[in-house]
Image 1 (cartoon, rainbow, N blue to C red):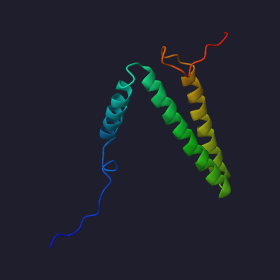
Image 2 (image 1 turned 90 degrees about the vertical axis):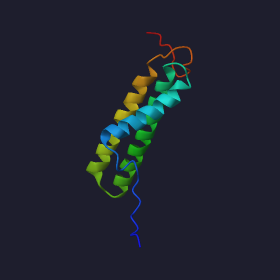
Image 3 (image 1 turned 90 degrees about the horizontal axis):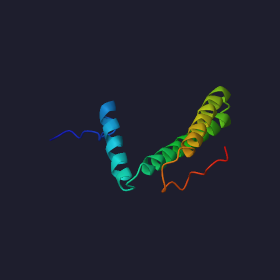
Image 4 (image 1 turned 30 degrees about the horizontal axis):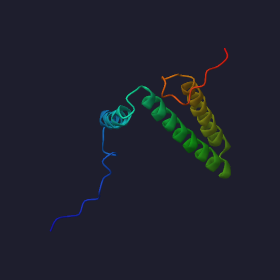
Length: 105
């Protein structure tokens, strides 16, 4: 009789290099569908939005638990995500880029 082994999530057992390759391969596959650099901007914007939302939720959770120092740290990092998102918006990636608005500067 064979002893049952617990299932291990394949990502958990990956090395850092293997995780980077997985992400790279998936993003390259997706951005190839755009045919321009704009796909990378879309991926970056999505990732930053997800990171910000996660940090916002964590900050609120810590506030509810009255862990105020931790809540402030999570909120600070959410602000960094928001700032990075704003910076990405200012990068023009060609005619496909519906997110870019010319400034009057």
